Image (tube, rainbow, N blue to C red; front, side, top):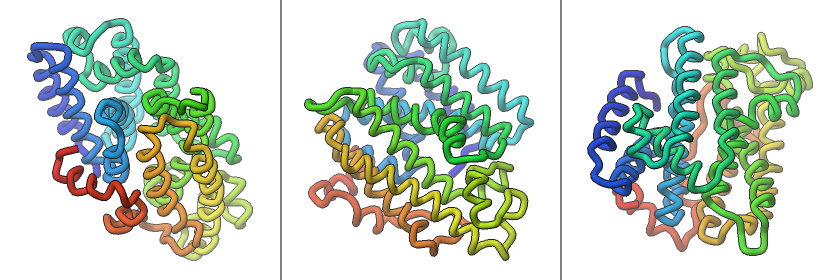
Length: 328
């Protein structure tokens, strides 16, 4: 799924106008949430589905967070423009984010010309006391996507890229999810870090070929070298078997993160655990395709709707048709 730049601009204008006409702060917030839900449902069927298991208030904030990370990611992934223009958009976006933090209320931010996405996201940051620096780390990771370089080791991949691209997103969500009654927020954040790394590793595994076409190499060089490969020729057809083994090694590291998150699910607030648990189940099932070593490396692997359904909590099945009908 990808939207053109003009599609994003049209959405910006349409939603911005609605927010500007809103008669109350509550109405403005509902406009932002509806638009954010549209973004989430359009780009990630899996995450859209698992977030339906959250309470409505938390679900709305998670949808707004998703829109705030989706747009910058699309700038560097799909906007057909030179790198300098992509980074200029990100620079302006960061400046607008910092301005949004200074204002109070969605309508006030929109009235200052700030995007509805950032107007809503800044509201979540304020409500949940999310450290503002986390989003700056995310934008820095997007800048790195615009000027990709290989990573020598798994540790460098995590510290130099995954921290900004996935871990801090997990931190955003954890501030919304909340910690359990017998756990601290710090314990929940540690769990979120492990899960965020696992999710990102699984996405690297499924996007090897697409990333290569964008000039990106997220498989650590140490894992490639262990199979006698290098970044220049790893996607040659004769190297597919060795590449699958490399992907399997990355998936094995992701598996450890999923298991850690599963064992420590109690670190999160009770009303968030079903959604987080469903996320673990869906993405771990996908990850295990790479662990088995039979997933193709030249196409993006996804779970079917039936496969996702099978790993969801049985007592929540009734939510699935309601979600796709637009009632949740």
